[in-house]
Image 1 (cartoon, helix red, strand yellow):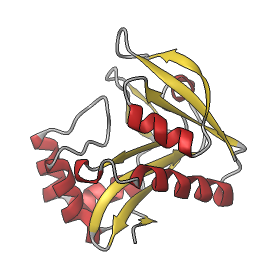
Image 2 (cartoon, rainbow, N blue to C red):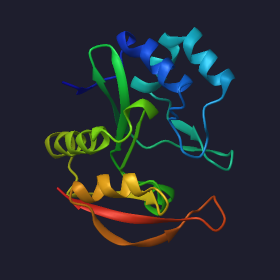
Image 3 (spheres, rainbow, N blue to C red):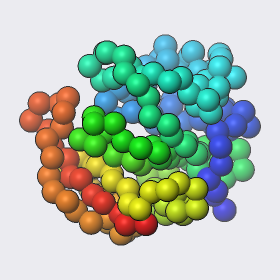
Image 4 (tube, rainbow, N blue to C red):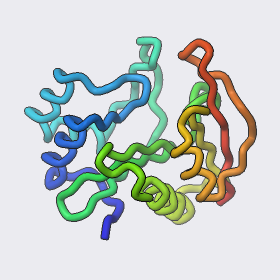
Length: 179
């Protein structure tokens, strides 16, 4: 049975395999062959970046900004990497606008199997036990019906439609989940 764990070396080969099959950690910046190759050649470095991230981040517009604290977990079964989920402990003004507290992704071979729904439920339990948050916000692109269903199955209440801050003419939905 799959479980949420901290990213670990035992899952790195499968993580790289997921990227090769089309898994992307970021919906705005797809994985590149060069990036995948760098991770495959330097898995220890990559894991350090995940488990002890830097205090700054490159924003979608290319500028450098402060990084909010987050907890990142991988959804795995044995050595098989299935997906990734992270909770941000607080929100920057940009994350209040788009992104929210929780983001997740499932490798393409795991789509349509309920993994994201279980991952989000598990992360909500983690937040209830470990963070002083009373509710979390999540955003989903209006075209991402699968993510919308995942959020709604986990108690997401639609706040409204919001413009995408970096993609002209694109929109998303903002949801709240009470904890």
